[in-house]
Amino acid sequence: MRTITLQIDDSVSDKFLWLLDRFSRDEIKILDQSDYVSDDEYLRGIEGMVQSINSARTEPIEQGVTLDKLDW
Image (cartoon, rainbow, N blue to C red; front, side):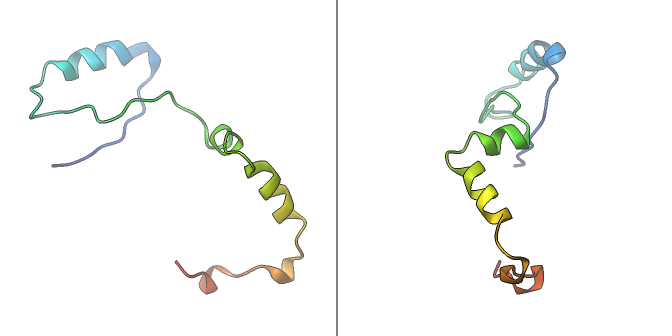
């Protein structure tokens, strides 16, 4: 089984969903639907995120950590 995330233009959305509905529930299932939100809009929608980013901008660069030192 494979999960695929698609962005579907509003102009074809109804047709695309109609097409998917023609498959059996065992073949294709719609797991989630949502309206597209840009990354910026999404981040601004998280409470406290803008304040956190603005706060981080004022920190001295010397307190930063390079990518190779991050604990992923």
